[in-house]
Image 1 (spheres, helix red, strand yellow):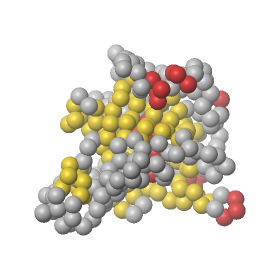
Image 2 (cartoon, helix red, strand yellow):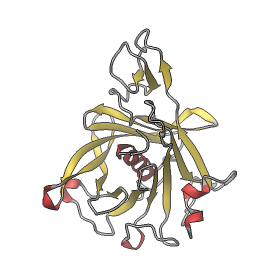
Image 3 (cartoon, rainbow, N blue to C red):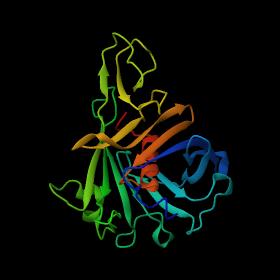
Image 4 (cartoon, one colour):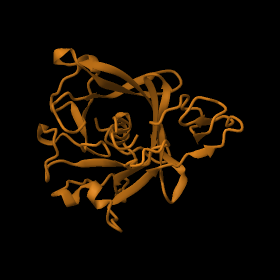
Length: 268
């Protein structure tokens, strides 16, 4: 668990794969479930899993655990984080499992990150616009621990301030527009469509992503668009890659990826 909550040392990169499946609940209903593996050239090692909860709730809620899906339990020791959205799926918070509670309690829970999706009010087709808010880093390269005492202390609220030295505000990299005269040359990836001769948005995933999806993204800081601290994308129908660097942790990156899976009523 310590590894999953520790920032990746600079300048290393952790390459992962996410496999999506379904979990069964009472009444025969199914809900999405995910397993995260660290991968290299010869093997993959299980790290974390997540399940979307089937509670009668007005917001989406995912639980991140160190258990395999085949051995899932909701004991306090195995739950490392919760991911919860607002009603329309435009704002998400990722926080710990303090006191065994799945709902954030001010003064108790540590907030790991937050994700904000820009609403698509006009319904125009195109890539999503994401803002990812991370806690700041200490001089010893450890993450600042943020425990909101009230709504005004949450990452989403603090991101609205002009200056806040204790948080980092990042965004998804803006895809390039391909006019459709010819297919983009490798390793560029067609962002929204698989058709080789149509207009589309593209991003350079350096061969790590092979299928088009509106869920695909890269996270960068506005002051350094070439330093990709996280990228996520589809490689098969139910398989995805997720790569991340300093200052991200595995739990932060996995939580951010889960927000991309979730349906967004106001963003599509």
